[in-house]
Image 1 (tube, rainbow, N blue to C red):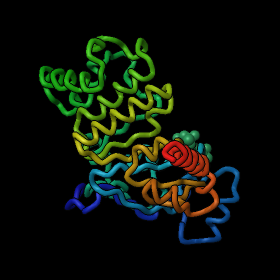
Image 2 (cartoon, rainbow, N blue to C red):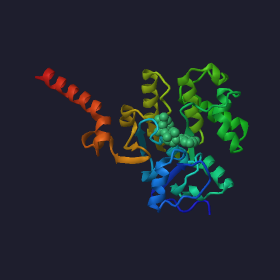
Image 3 (cartoon, rainbow, N blue to C red):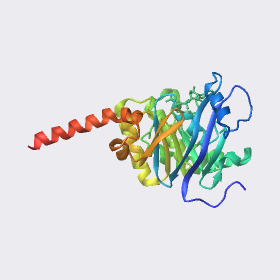
Image 4 (cartoon, protein in one colour):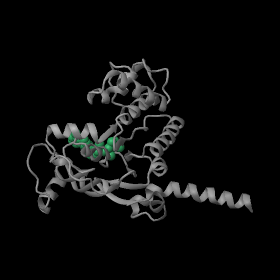
Amino acid sequence: MSKTAEPKNAIEVTNLWKVFTSDARQIDFEDKQKLQELEDSDEDTVAVRDISFSVQKEEVFVVMGLSGSGKSTLIRCLLRLAEPSSGKININGWDVCNLDAEQLTEFRRKEAAMVFQHYGLLPHRNVLDNVAFGLKLQGIEKKERYERAMHWIERVGLTGFEHYYPAHLSGGMQQRVGIARALICNPPVLLMDEPFSGLDPLIRREMQDELVEIQDRVKTTIFFVTHDLDEGMRLGNRMAVMRKGRFVQVDTPDEILADPADEYVARFVQDKRTQIEKANKKKTTTSA
Ligand SMILES: Nc1ncnc2c1ncn2[C@@H]1O[C@H](COP(=O)(O)OP(=O)(O)OP(=O)(O)O)[C@@H](O)[C@H]1O
Ligand SMILES: [Mg+2]
């Protein structure tokens, strides 16, 4: 069966591994010696190491880590855009790792949408058709899909640009199209891989605010990847800090700031703590 009764959490991941290997051999993840050989090999990369976590319904869960820590591989595994090597993924009752090709298409169409860092728009279709594309795949007739697309185009502030092609839009505008395209299908889970990292700071902030506002209204579950601590803290209900394929801490942003789990996380949050301490000092001196 493709979908079982819905569990309490929107996303449940258990002992997930992703290894990029030079051949298609089976790996026994219980065999510690074999694992060590894999770690030492130059040809293989262990990108996701034994990760387990759950994301509650309507939660914004942020994964933050430096470049190469495995964030994109992890988020891609959730939709099987990267094939997990071992482990379990359950998204709203879908046993993701055991879906056949047809079920996987159905799962991607109904349950989860992804917004990519580099927008991933269809270059030969205009804004209207890009936004309406998911509805077309669902077989919804033209009049309805254009009406719904126009609604989302307005929501993301692109009214007047319906007939523009992606190449004629700025990065921020293209990303708005990407977000409208993902949200139009009303996905129970929204996956976002550094969606704002190519944008100017001001526009980036605006897009973050917009996402918070949209989230308040549509109440979807968001899995958001970033390498920016400020962004993670602004958006996340909880945040996982990722290093070398592992989650080294999963907590609320405040807990991470107040009580970093190790040296690595402490270094990550140091600047932010200093910034807050300085701001507090300034406040006390001005009010004194
Ligand atoms: N298709 C692939 N084939 C082989 N190795 C890969 C592949 N994709 C990613 N990797 C490796 O997996 C590791 C994790 O990469 P990943 O792209 O997931 O990191 P990231 O945290 O998303 O980094 P960034 O912040 O730069 O986007 C890296 O060592 C990378 O080289
Ligand atoms: Mg990445």
